[in-house]
Image 1 (cartoon, rainbow over the protein chains, first blue to last red):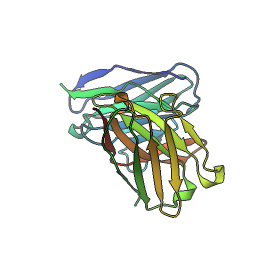
Image 2: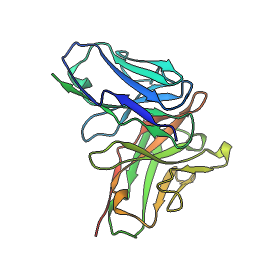
Image 3: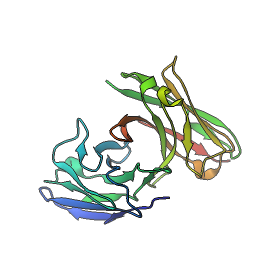
Image 4: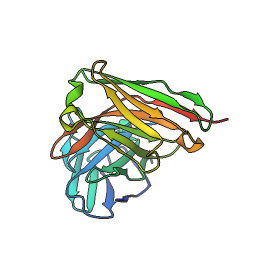
Length: 107
Length: 122
């Protein structure tokens, strides 16, 4: 199975900050990497697919990059509605696997 | 507008069975792969399984933790996705999400339902 490791597991940031979350795969997955946002008590929402493609409806302040084993999700200017938990997920091979999540909290 | 509405969750005893459903609308159901993902209380996301589309003969894939106990099926006439869960264990307690896939070199998760809660407890 491909293990997905996110870092950090949590972070505190201020409104307006630029935030970067890292996801590392235990083996190469090309660009078959997605990012999701989940707010408390809500279903996850899709943000990014194919490592860097923004889902329709996702705000352009979110961007993704990377290929192979190392990936990043960047929020250009953190807003109050962005405080949530973010997950990466690989869809290169079965079983499909998620990272452990990164909780973004208010400083 | 794509809509996915799960139902059928509830309380079931260990060793019991339950079927949860997902009603899909707003798209051509037979064209898309569909997945189930679950989330135990206070935990992260875990993929449960997938059923491919009509063009790929509705074949399935499962996570090792549920293989042999869970079965995914779909009814094209009703635009419905199902997850039949047998031999349930306390560790199957979770919110179960239905997901519609989309294709760009590979099938990825695009739309999520709101989830249905399954509690396995005596």
